[in-house]
Image (cartoon, rainbow over all chains, first blue to last red; front, side, top):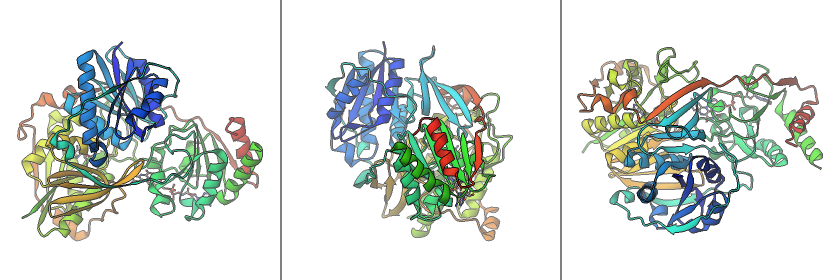
Length: 324
Length: 261
Ligand SMILES: Cc1cc2nc3c(=O)[nH]c(=O)nc-3n(C[C@H](O)[C@H](O)[C@H](O)COP(=O)(O)OP(=O)(O)OC[C@H]3O[C@@H](n4cnc5c(N)ncnc54)[C@H](O)[C@@H]3O)c2cc1C
Ligand SMILES: Nc1ncnc2c1ncn2[C@@H]1O[C@H](COP(=O)(O)O)[C@@H](O)[C@H]1O
C-alpha cells in the first residue's frame, strides 16, 4: 500500500483531535506516516500509533517556535522527500487550521502539487483521493481531485470519527536543515490562549451560541450556563463579538470558526449567510429567537419563538434536573 | 524613499445573492452581482493607514479577474488608493489558486513593491492560502492573518491571533502581509473620493505582458479538478413552537428525544 503523509497538530506533545480524525481518513487511502514537529514531537507517538500511524517522523528545533510557518514547511518537505524516495507516496494530509492551510499551500508550491483546502470527507478514487468540500456557505457540496503532483489536502475538524487502529508507530528522527527563508518572519512573543475548561469550539459535540440578542457581555453567563449543563462549547455571532461581549476566538462563521457539531443551539442569532457558513453542516440545529421570521428558523430541526431570557434559563434548569 | 504598497483585491459574487456554479463547474460570475470582496476592504484600509503614516507612499490595487472586476478596483480607488492594475485575459477563465498566485506574483514584480497586502480569504473561494503562496513565490517573508499591523523603518510588525496562541510577528520588507476583519473597520468612500477615483489610472495587463503561457493557467492548466457540484438538499422543515411559558421545557423534551440529554 502507498504511504500517506499526515501532518500532526499537537500542543507540546498532546495530539489534537483533528489529527486523529485525519488518521481515520488516511487509512482509507494507504498507510499513514505521521510527521510531528516541535516541542514534545516524540511524545505524540503513542497516540498516533494507537490510531493507525505505521511510522512517526519527528523533528525538534528552536526554529519551529521562533519563526512563522516556513520552518514547518521545510520539515514537511524533508518528510515528503524521504518518504517518496523510499516508496510510493499517495497524498499529504494536513489539518485545516489557519496555520495548517498555510503550511500545506507552501509545501504544494514547492513540490509542484495542486492543493485542496477544507475537505470534509475523503475517499479513494481511480485517479487519486476524492475530496468532498462545501461551497458557498455550505449550500453546495463539491467533489474534487488534485490533478497534478502528489495531492496535498487539508481536512476540516469533525470530518471523520476517531477510530482506534493500533499500528507500529515506529519513531524515526527526521533530518531537517533550514534555508535562509525559514528565518524570514520572527515570532517575537507568544501568549497562549487561556483555557476556559470548556471543550474546544471546533471539536465539541455540542455548541451553544449567542448573538446580538444576548444584549451584553454579562448576559453571556446565561449562554455559558446552558453550555455547561450540556458539556458544550460556547460560540458567538460576529455581532456579539464586535460589540465586545465575547472573544473573537469564539466567533462562529465565515471569518470565525467553522463548526460541525452533533448539536448547535443558536440563541438571539438571526442566521445571516456569513454565520450560516460556519454552522450549517451541524447535524441537529436548534434556535431560540423572538422573531418568527428570522432566517435561522429555515435551518432548524427545532425552534422556539420566544425571548431567550425566558427560554434559555428554563432549558438549562430542565437539562440539569433531567441529568440529575 | 517611497513605500510601494500593492494591495491584492478580488472581485467576488455577492454572498447574499444566489451563488452557484456554471456548467463547467467554475464559479458562476454572470448571474450574481459582483463586488469588491468585503474581506479585501480591510486590506485596502490597512494599506491606506500605513500610507498615511509613511512620509511618502503609493498604494496600488491589483486584481486578477474578468472585465467587471474593474468595479472592485474603482471601489478601492474611491476609498483612496492611488492607482490600479487589472490583469485580464480570456485564457484566465477557470484558473485555480496556483495559477492565480502565479499571475499575481508576476504582476506584483512588474509593478514593483515593498509590501503586498492581501485579505485573510476571498469570500467566494474562502481558501485563505493565497497570501502564503505569494510569499513563497516571491521569496519574501509572510506576515499573515494579522489583526494589527504596523510598518516602520522597513520593518513590518503585527499580531496574529491563532488557534492556541496570539503571536507578535516581525519581518523586514519586502514582505507579504494579510489582515483579518479584526484589523479595523474599512472606511466608506467619500463623495470626493468617488469623483477622484474616476481620474485615477487603471492599467490593464494580459498574460503576454506578464510572459505567462496560456497553458499555465485556466481550467486546463489548473492543478485541481472539480468533478461534481451538487446543491445541498434543503434541511427538512423542523418543528417550530411559540413560547407560551413552557418553551424551555419543550426544547428540553426535544433534546431528550434526540438523546442529547
Ligand atoms: C465579510 C463578512 C464576514 C462575516 N463573518 C461573520 C462570521 O464569521 N460570523 C457571524 O456570525 N457573522 C459574520 N458576519 C456578520 C453577519 O452578516 C451578521 O451581521 C451577523 O451574523 C449578525 O449577528 P446576529 O445574528 O447576532 O445579530 P442580528 O442579525 O442583529 O440578529 C439578532 C437576533 O436576535 C434576536 N433577538 C433579539 N433579542 C432577543 C431576545 N431577547 N430573545 C430572543 N431573540 C432575540 C433578533 O430577533 C435577531 O434575529 C460577517 C459579515 C461580513 C460582511
Ligand atoms: N483574483 C485575485 N486577484 C487579486 N487578489 C486576489 C485574487 N484572489 C485572491 N486574492 C487575494 O488573496 C486573498 C486570499 O484569497 P484566497 O486564498 O483565495 O482565499 C484575498 O483576500 C485577496 O487579497
